[in-house]
Amino acid sequence: MPSTATPKQSPIPPAAPVALHQPMTWLHQSLESDTHTQFVNRTRDICYGLALALQLVHGCGMDVAAGTSPILKSNDAERMMLLATTAAKMLGEEAEREIEFLNDRAQQGGAA
Image (tube, rainbow, N blue to C red; front, side):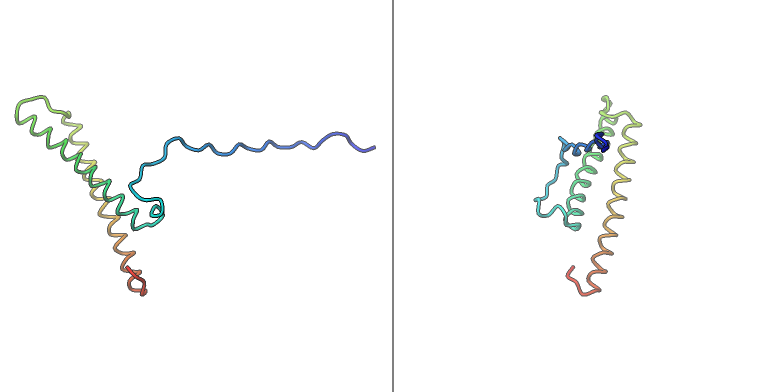
């Protein structure tokens, strides 16, 4: 006599939810996959971040010199300087990799 039991089926996992937050980009959608353009975009963001961090630290120093309450505590100002130093180093290292890539491509006869 044939079995009337149905085989146990595993549930279909739900589709991954679409994130509500999408990262902000200055790039046109057609440029988002180009590594050189991504480098330029990151450079822009890092430079503006560096400028802001250094302005805050400078403002803090000016406040202290003027005898007013600084916008940052001294240890926060020090952290901002470390952040700026790390960001500048990271940007320089990334630029070195980009230069190596462009030089390698140029040596292989490709357009830079």
